[in-house]
Length: 494
Image (cartoon, rainbow, N blue to C red; front, side, top):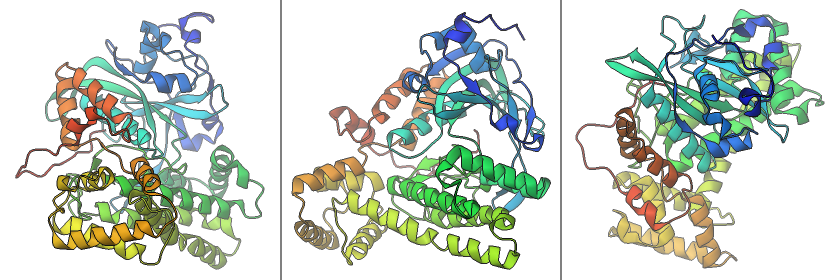
C-alpha cells in the first residue's frame, strides 16, 4: 500500500474528519485490519449531495487518491479500519457472524457534529469471512445504492450509499462478474446481533459496556434515567415499530430480517434480497432462499417483534438483579410493540387516504380496501396513486361494485372532517409515492450498468429522488412489468 500524502494535500482537503469511538470498545467486538487493495479502481457513481452533508468535497472525492480510499487502497488520515464482530439468528437459527467482507474505516464527524459510520463493503476477507472471498459484484452493490437512496427519498430511515467503485478484478459467482466496492454510510452498524454476540462470547461487563456505548451514541437523552437499560429497550422498540410501519406503507419487503440485519439505531440495513411489492398480497416473498415465507410482507411486523424479543433477552441481566423480575420488565416493554406498530400503520394509511382525524370505523374502511386489492390483485402503489390523482380507471378496482360502494363511504368519511378536500389531496400526495423502485426497472438499470451503460441507472435515480413529485416524467416509471409466468426472485448477493 502506498504511503499517505502529507497534510495539506488532496487527501486532507477531501474533508475527512474521523473519530473512532467504536475502536475504543473492548477488543472482543472487532478486529483491527485494513481493506485488501484492489487492482485498478474506477469510480462508477458518487453521491454528491450526501458527500456535502457529510462535510466532504465532492470534487476532491473524484480524484485518483480519493478513489483509492473508496477502493480500500489508501487509508484516510484519522481512520482506524476494523471489521466488526456480531452474531445473529438467520432464519431462526443462531450463528456466529461478523463483517465477512466489510471494513469500517471510522466515524465521520460532520460540520454539524453528527457522527456517521463510513464502511467499505466488498473490501476483502476478514477473520469473520467463514470461507467467503470477501468481495462483491458490481450489480449487487449498485442495487444497494439504488434501493437505499430510494428509501431515503421516501423518508424511511436507512443506511445510505456514498460511492461505488469497480475494482478491476473479477469475482467468481455462477460466472465471473466485475468486482465492486460500496461505501456505506450509517448512523452506526450496531445490531441486535452485536448484543447477541456480547452475551454469547463476552462477559456481563461487555454487554453493559456495549449498552452504555449505544445509549451515549444513539439515545443520550436517556442516560440519566433510573433504569436506562429499560429505556434503551423501549426506545429501540419505538424505532422499530415506526420503521417497519414505514416499510409496510410503501410495500417494501426486506427479505432477510435476521437479527444481524436489525439495527439498534432504527435504520434499514443490508439490501440483499429486498424488493418492492407490485400486486398487493401479504404473502409476497421475493427472496430465493425464503422457501417457507418467514419474511413475507405480511410477516414483517411479527418478525420485528421476534427480533426485539431476542434483543430484550440480551438486556435481561441489566434490567433487574432478579432474573424473574427482569423478564417481567422486558415482557411489559415488548407488549407495547403491537400497539405502537398498529398506531403507526393506521396513521400512515389514514394519511394515504387523506384522513386527518380518527374514527372508530376507519380500520374497517381500510381493511375493506386492502381486502379488495388482494382479491382483485391490484397494484399496491398505483391503487393509492389513482385515488390521489382521481384517475380510478387506472386501477383494476374501478368497475367493481364493492369498490364503488367503498368509494362512496370514503368520500363521506372525508366530508366529516374539518379539513378541506384540497388539504386532503395535499396530504395524500405527501403520503403516496407516485413512483417506487419497480423491480423490473431496477433489473433493467443493473443489466445495462454491468454492460457498461450507466445512463439507465442515472435516469432511474433521478426519477426516484423525488417520489412524491407527480411529474409527467414519472409516468413511464409507474407502468407495471409485462406479464410473466416466471415469478420475480431476488438473491442474497449484497
